Image 1 (cartoon, one colour):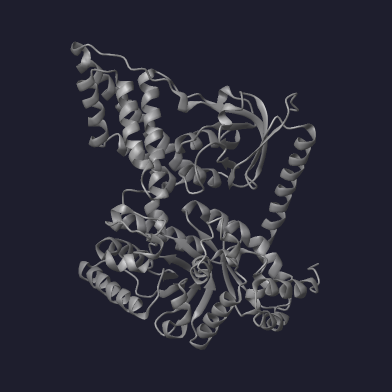
Image 2: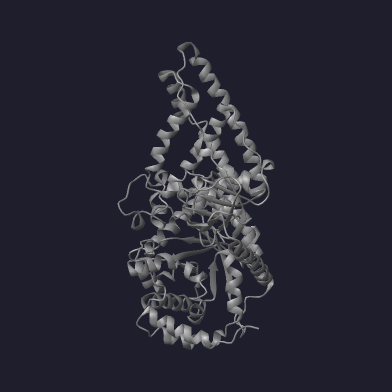
Length: 585
């Protein structure tokens, strides 16, 4: 596979990890040529009829894709193609295309192309990244419809060789599903982010994906040798023999390491001196349940339920959507607990249909529990679904962004109204669930002793707690160096929350990124934390680390760390202690 051309190393954003080696196939779908062709007035009706026939054919093909996605990926991702099919039912889109054909007397292809451009401009100008990414659905539908109008059929993978790396300007969900289940080993694309549908599908299919590769589609021709490193976000075109050998070795080692880690799934999560630790999983999508089970998760410590909305936007999930999704989680993880966080829409996950308002600083605005209480007619559906799904199951309900006791009391009153409504309707539901809160606002951490009197459990969300406490936007490159989980103020807050939880017999876990970082595991256990919730694939490594620690000796080291005056001093103290630990044999 060695090429005579000089290698080109491109740095992008790794959004689906892993290493792949193959030959590039350039997908030039964004270059569909559409010409403006005048239509005689006498032929306009026939052109509209041609559009309607093509629209119907596109619906049929989308339904076929939806069925394949349902069989291979389940209901969640199959819903993407239902949403795309609905676009073809949307009068504001289809009627606008027909109107353009009639008023401008142009061909259907040109009308579809121009109307799509108008709609996409609106999507691109939305503040919400998640809603902007819904424009991908419109792009996908437009391309599909244009293919049908132009008589262009989808290419099949039977035309391609093995170990194919798809290179494209962008890649839509249906293309990711269609290509990703067969010979494709990686994707390298110019556009897209970690929360796009395409990125989600790539991770679910365990296919490396690098985005943010400006101009990559113009740098390759079909059959170019390539390497994709979805972990570090690197793509190498025309690699040398040495580079091929290096990445082949890395790929082999990753496979061997994952296999070794998988073997820890059945081992107890117990420290060297016999202290049991509960390792749970954070998930966003139902498809991650398999990984949670495979890697030995003892329950779900965080399901971000807003992804139910994000996957269906702009439609809200139905009550039955909630019930079926939550029951699947609860049954899969039984008898372990499943912590379902109520919608944390708002902030950067802004949903205009729910918010009904614009905010200058949405991250500090109407979000989390505040939005739940402000829009009860919308969140009642979620509560009904939760209560119905919890019957006979180990359901824990968690409220985000709580900053005062009054919010918990208001939620309890709201929940009582929903239960009374279910009672009147004769619908079976659960009263036997645990209610808890996220400790992610500094105010909540500082009154943890008060809040502990109102709830059954705490879950410490370190991402926002650190950000709000240190006044640091960790996504801001100018101040991100100040985002320090080991800052003494953060450690003291965490310690205070743990002490308050212990004194009030309230269970406590940590579900932020700090919990999944091996650099901090020993310190957190030394502070008394006994439940961590991390991404499924982080579980084996964290478990291996825990099994090698003497937890009884960590308390003394932790006390020393808590007397330090800076994050750097804490880090040196912690490193010094861990260096004296004997490795697990």
